[in-house]
Amino acid sequence: MRKFYLLILLFLSMYSASLFSQSKIANNILNIESKKRAEIFKEETNFRKAQHYFEVNNWDSTLVYSMRHLSISSNKELNDYCHYFRGFTFHKKKLFKEAKLELNLISKKFIFYPLANKTLGEISMQLKEFKKAIEYFSQIENPSITNKQGFKASTIYQNIGTCYLHLNQFEKAEEYLFKSKNLKEKENDNGSLLNLYINIANLYYVQYKDEQAFPYFEKSYLLSKKVNDFNKKWDASLNMAVVEENRGNYKKALEYRKEAEQWNDSLNNQNKVWAVADYEKKFAVAQKQKQIKVLEVENQLKNTQRNSLFFSAIGLLILLTGGVYMYTQKAKSAKTILIQRNKLDQLNANKDQLFSIVSHDLRSSVNALKTSNSKLSDSLQTKNYEELNQLITQNSSIANDTYSLLDNLLHWAMLQTKQLYFHKESVHLYSIVQQIEYNYKSLLQEKEIRFENVVPKNIFLFVDLDSLKIIFRNLLDNAIKFSKHNDEIRFYTAEINSEFCQIIIEDSGIGMSQNTISELLQDSETLVKKNNSEIIGTGLGLQLCKQMTAKNGGTLSIQSEINKGTKIILTFSKITKNG
Image (tube, rainbow, N blue to C red):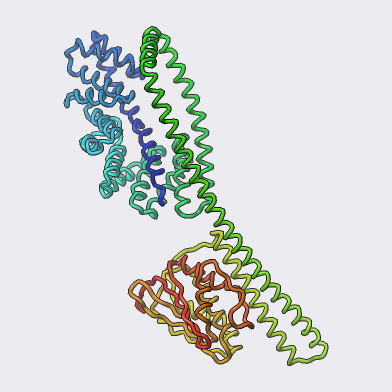
């Protein structure tokens, strides 16, 4: 199951934290102009105090003196400033309803009316009223407006794109986010660009366009190295962990998660410092309002006494529900652990069986090589060159079989531990078969086996090249091993449709029974011996072929009869080219 819920959560929290990224710059311009008005209208004492407290971010005093000014003044221009002071202050305090009421009272003739629209758009976004937010932002997206107001068009484009993303209007979202990208990449603001890259990545990610989303997650991660915001570093690292998990690279994902935890610890330490400062501020306010607080506590105590029975019943119900839930979860966990333990026991049994068989075959091969070398030494002393030649040929065959077994074991182990790299690409089928034929030419000539490559030259498969070679080598090696002198082996194709192609490896060898075929095609099964008692094999090569075929999105089937040869049928997706 995809893990994009985590990414969307990060995206929302990150955006909420960055809503005021340019408000400071815009308010600086507004503060300069409002200060000029305060100097011009010196008799407006309440306005001058409201302007001063707004400038130094003393929100409570801003609300008090702006309200006093509005209650007695008829100066429309100064009233517009006060309505903006109050609207922005309520916004900072997350009192969104009051903020919207104040900002909507501002006259359209007000010089900072576009700035009011920007704030209304941001409030609408935080209230998840995305259509309304788009209406506000659309009125101020012109760069000629934004530059005069102290905020950037790139931010407005990003806000509009974000709204369309929440409305699942992906084409519109992409249009505005890339408008923002074209501007932000020219601006020297890594933190803002990092947020934008996350937005674009999520745009593609929620559409399951992972190949387009992942590069932007990676870009945001690289940019996080250049910023000092621990929250952004944490978001970027955690996003990369999810990306790597979706790619199947769990080792890299773990590294990113560890990095995210480090940044989270740093963020928590920073938050503790801020929390202490906030606590001190709240304590000072509490001291000034001591009498009010005492009355509130008394009222709360009375309400608590009156409703104690009700809350006790609620608490008991919650406790009972929690106990049932915990018991259910514990039972589920126990069942899951039991299933996993049984599966692990089965896997260990299969592993022990495989190692036992491989060890037996290796021991047999080495013992045969040891015996043959002893005979080879005797033949050298007696100068029996005919027997010497046979023994050398025998030793070579044993060494080749042992090498093939070890090579298959290595690839199987890498496949099981997910260390084998797969990269699908366009592969010319005829050339690959030709190359495999050349590698086994000496074995084919030794048994005088006729080999035919009748694969059409215009077929291209969409597979991983290295794994396809491993599959063909194992199947051809088996075909040679189970064929007699003067037999025939053929590689040919049968097209199913325009998307898939069958590759058939056919030999006229000893064949196999339906029981043997069924055992070979079972998952995680290995065979100690074929029906022919002189031919021993683990079945590991065919198991490797099956798993690698599945990795390439293909299928493998077998058709065979005793003494009538064998057909191995592979099915892969193809890319047809003329030629």
